[in-house]
Structure formats: C-alpha cells, structure tokens
Image 1 (cartoon, rainbow, N blue to C red):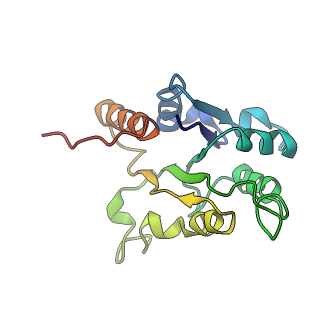
Image 2: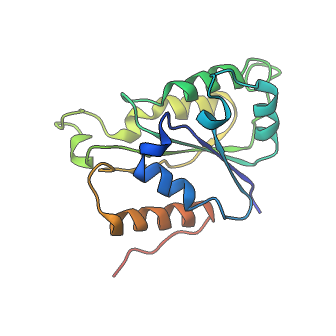
Image 3: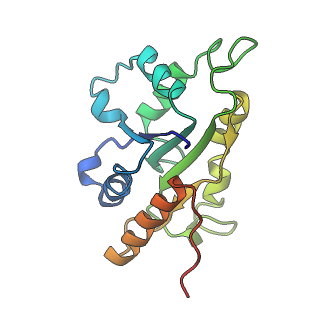
Length: 180
C-alpha cells in the first residue's frame, strides 16, 4: 500500500472549518500520516533532518493548505525552501524524492467562477499552482492532479461532508462516481 504524508499547513487551524474537517476526515486512514506544520513548528524553526526522514518514509506527499494570495502560507514556503535542499531533493546528487508523488490539496474561499479568464482572479487555481508542478518536476516527483475545494467560505455542512468524503477516497486511491 502507498504510504501518504499529508503536510497540513494552516496558520490558524482552529478557525478553519474546512481544513479542520478535511484533516479530521483522513486521520484514521491506514498508511496516512497527517503532519501539522504549524503545530510542530510554532517558533518556525524547522527540523530539516526530521522532515527529510518523514519524506523518505512515505511514497506520496500531499501539501494541504488554504490558498493564500495565490500561493501557500508562509511556513509551507519556508519548509519547501529548507527541506527540499540542493544535493538532497534536487541537483546532480539530489535524488531523495525521485519516484515519489506530490499532490496539492487546497481550499479556496472564492467560487470557481472567480478563478477563470474574465473572472476577478483571471486564472484557474490549477494555473496558479504551477510552481508546485515545477517543484515536483525539479525534484523528480510525479505531480498529481490537485484537490481543490472552491467556495470554502460559503458552503453548508452537506457540501463539506461531500468534500471530506472525496478527499478520503482520493487518499485511498479510489475514484468516486458522481452522484446520480
């Protein structure tokens, strides 16, 4: 079975209804490790060796975060800068992540219509996530299709439950059939 490391990066998880529910919905899955970066590093001092060991123990990496100003929260960016170091994650001797996969799981406050040509934000979220695709490429990882939850600031409990179920199924490597 594929071992999955979910790096949860939310600066204020206690206030996040959606990211809290998504993380809670997968914590019991076999071979899934949920690692809350802000809880692990409240002082923002990352234990690089520990993080690299965690990455080596897993086949798939999921970066779960709220979409912040067209990117990831600051600690996740810092984590990438420090943990994916030259000679370990990339470069002529940096092969540690080769063959692993990378997926983004992100929550977006605005609806999908705001993220398209002609919309307020001009680009689809998948386009705005391209730096993560480039990161996967540089490190020899396979970039998997992002899991994007649009409208996170406005949907009800039923829709939230549907997103949690979809996230669980995705991490279990099962594809959900659309509801009839």
